[in-house]
Amino acid sequence: MSQFCQQNGIIHETTVPYLPEQNGITERAIAVFFKMVRCMLWSVGVDLRYWGKAFMYAIHIRSLTLTSGLKEIVPYEAWTRHKPNVSHLHIFGSLSWAHVSKQVRKGKLESRAVKVQLLGWWTDETKGYQLEDIENGKLITSRDVQFFEDNSPSELAVMDIGAPTVSTGDLNNFIDNAIDREAN
Image (cartoon, rainbow, N blue to C red):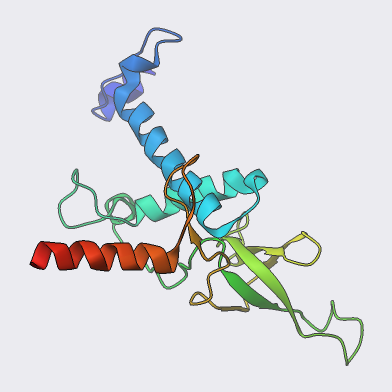
């Protein structure tokens, strides 16, 4: 291990067991990811059992977001040396319709699509969206999905756990009033 680290210019440092304070950068990153996950789950009303999928989606989003440690490139680009394609990104938990293939449908008159909720954009090595069937709660993977991101599954904006919920209309009025007060 020491030889590998020296050859690759890595300084191998260890911490005292059970003392996370010595690993501040990692602990802070985990805290940021869990804040993202909390917002993603509560703002769209996704079941808390999907926190792992939200966590993976949050990590993916952060790898495609500018950081102060890198100049004018995102972590994904620094790692792969390729500009990322973000066309696959959609709002976590957004309501969608997934195509049901002929092989799965039971007959010609069966529905050609199912109402689903987005949980992620990958499943193992496949290039498809990971979705939850709204009717039966089953997880499915599909690449043929129509997203409706304008229709929020929740009309509530969660401000803080334990705090009262505020409707998006009330929140917009509050912001507009605050801007008007600043202008005057």
